[in-house]
Image 1 (cartoon, one colour):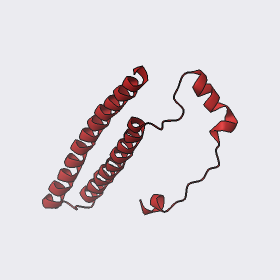
Image 2 (image 1 turned 90 degrees about the vertical axis):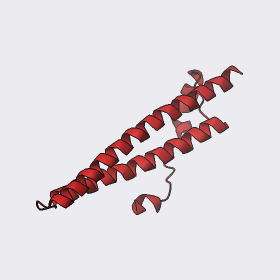
Image 3 (image 1 turned 60 degrees about the horizontal axis):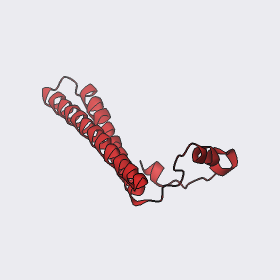
Image 4 (image 1 turned 180 degrees about the vertical axis):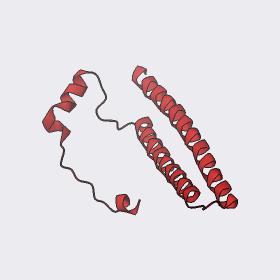
Length: 114
């Protein structure tokens, strides 16, 4: 995770040079989300993705702990608890993402109508 946080952004791709912006505008797609609801949606999606990544790491840690338990029942139980709690967390994060995505899309549509 430290590897991803320390990297610099590379601007090697310019969407304006490919015609994608013009195509998006022709299709009546909002290519520049500068409104508050779009920004909030991006922040919420990023936060939920980060939490999902942490929970995925916990599932992997639980699996490795289970494999290295060596038949010790206490370690196996602890590993199962890690995996179970992480999977429950992933389900909750998935539902939170779906709900927030729906609400943000509804707010964006309400702003377009107004």
